[in-house]
Length: 291
Image (cartoon, rainbow, N blue to C red; front, side, top):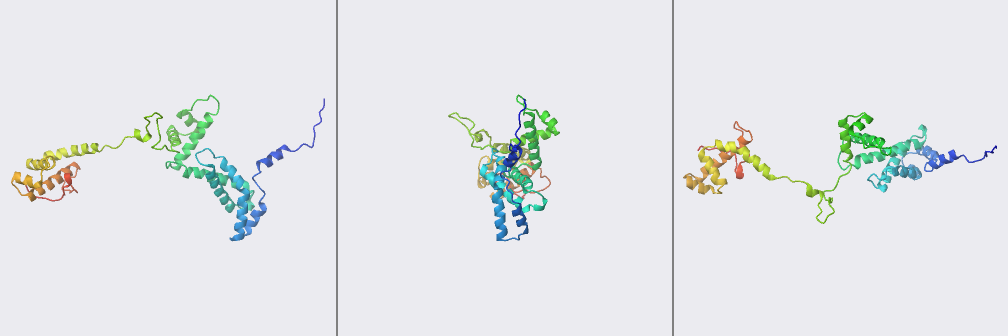
């Protein structure tokens, strides 16, 4: 049986095309006029009219980047900035505005993510590796049941080395950071990330300094070692040390300064007469005296 096919049905292809370009108004006349105007109020008014006409398209492009850690309102502002740049740079003699504006606005939004949204400053090369790794992982796992690709799988898919893939995967975790106050446990005795981090122990520095000074102390004359022991371990004053040894307090001061300078210089590998800035207990350096 033959069925008559109506010849007057609507052109669905044309309708679909119109729907896809609902936010692409016909502004050729406005652009032609803008190109003839000098800087001034009239040109600004035409420019504002073009921005208003094309703003829905900019918002649509911004919507493609939602759910990536940035608010929709901020994305729309970035897209609007890209739209203004596109209008200012567009040459009506080179084709349709939409074909020029879409990549310009999209690029502006992508630059915003690249330059503003990273919690850690990551070099451009590493950002590009991150993007390649992210896209490769998505492509390799797009089929249901696909296993998580290994570093070798991603390297083979992208043509990168395994080291480059590793760098890109590390960068995947650098886009955002976790607050040190973030709770890591929901128990009553919960703790934060900061509670799991160690701190510098100043005692290690003391151990290093003590071991470095030992050899220099052994080389001092016995009387100078005794003076340093009485001053810094028995906490005796210079006057008391002078009375015990039968010498002047000034002589004790010079011996302490000279001994400290010598031990410090040897500990720092400064043999050969190089001076220092100070010794243990805040004693000045650079004095010299004979025993």
